Length: 454
Image 1 (tube, helix red, strand yellow):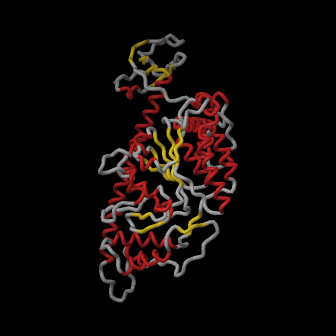
Image 2 (spheres, rainbow, N blue to C red; image 1 turned 135 degrees about the vertical axis):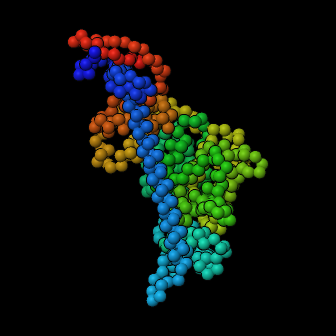
Image 3 (cartoon, rainbow, N blue to C red; image 1 turned 90 degrees about the horizontal axis):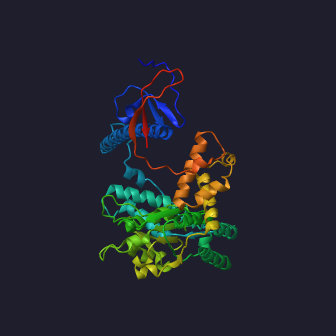
């Protein structure tokens, strides 16, 4: 008879699992398992718990959505009823609320360092027309357009041109961080210097970054947006909706929505956001009847880009200051008319020095993103040279993921220094096979344990 009060002493590298039910067995005896498997089982248990909580939250969200939909229908029904006798109050519908919006009566003065991104008089006429003579009977679209124009016109048509006063030093630092992009940085520096000379906003020619996956094309674009102090939008061309996502969907669609450029420029604060056209070569050969990249032809030319029309709101605006950065693995798949509008750069794999600098840069960027408070960031020690070297042989995406794991491990254990194991990649799940052993503890009592070996 085994005493349950006896203490099991596990061999080195093993641990005791009192409840083996996770393995699908029906044994009540304790299990002796390798440490790595115990950790894996704990992770799986936490994952199951997370999935259960997500399912509960999903059902709760569905119930809340159904309740809100019911309340909205009831509110709309009540809004169509005449007000009670002697009462002057009435619940407004979304359209009525939008029709109550106003815009400045006169064109506000232009603040320094701004450019006009739409025609003020045309926008005011459109706003008044939406109120009095809407071109559609769809109340939701009318209300949406009124809200859009009211927000866009609140401060006039002026938008700031993102530009750092220290752009020379910042771009020089970027070239040092990613030396395999030095030629790209040089082209941008020339455009910025010419803008300084002319006193006008910089116009950057669209840039196409070619090269194998993992050379840092996306990371470079994100860092460039930080240097320029500009917002960034990533548009992937591995789907057929790239055109509608940039310039809006057809107005007659029931789910018509404005495009990313309208959101970034007209409803945003900057006239020159960075738009990453990711994997542009995947959207080039979708057939003769639909090629999403063809929508870029007018966007990539400064003259036509100054009068881009968002299809959903049916209104023109100025998108000529947008900074376009495209990535591709195979330039041969890009149609010649589109490719000719880009300044091309082939990005090679960085050498070992470049890899080390890139690894440190991505780690620091990850630290700033996950630990935004400077006082807390300052408490973390710099990774050792060996740890940076370990990161250097990963792709930029892998470096980011490894940095996130290392920061999480240090935070979980209350450390501010990193250990080599923090940067280890998760190991693939090994094959397991169960065998039976009966080890003895120092007291001579035997315990039935099942050892799982890889």
